[in-house]
Image (cartoon, rainbow, N blue to C red; front, side, top):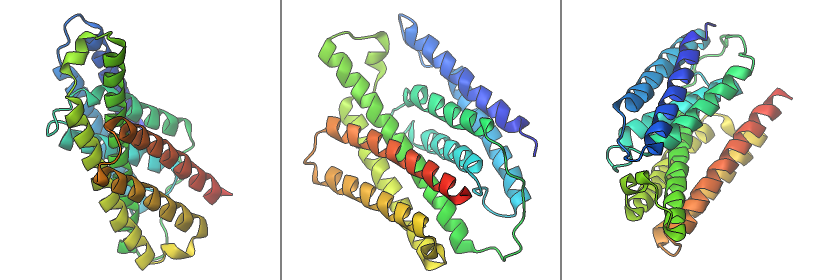
Length: 260
């Protein structure tokens, strides 16, 4: 399959990140329209490639680690474009662009499995399980990014070394609220995906079942902790960021195990 759209998308995210860093290093930070255009262009090309891949596979393009990484990058970008303006988090693009670039760069280093259409009839419940679960992962990724942004802001306050872009960060209260709501959104989506998978056949896959329940319990615990408001915004930020790293490692482990 032709990778040109995906390569171009990856380059757009790299360009957007570089432009954002240049703006951050300037004495007076000004959000760049070109950075937003780069993210939007990268998203459009992601969508084109995933559409082509889905047509070749005849189902949701999540048949390999390559597909999962690209779909995850697409989910992160989609949720950022939908929520970034709502929560006044334009600077999150500075942090999300390198993450998406890294995900897709790793994918491009992997071999792309041939698009072999399954002879089995399309199972809409399993397709829903796969797609909704990865979109949930995108919400968790963005929650982790919001957490990192909050921690960077807190670090500058503690050291009293305020860069120009500090004054353009959303307030810590807004970042904490965004982190909490994104975790809630991700947990609801993950619950829907888990229900769809269990309803129609996922339960027979031992490792996938354990990992899915493990992630659901992890983010269920985090959702309860955030809802109780018994943890500080800083600790919540650490938990959201750490949980996403665990998620990435488990997704990688499942894909490796499925090949073994």
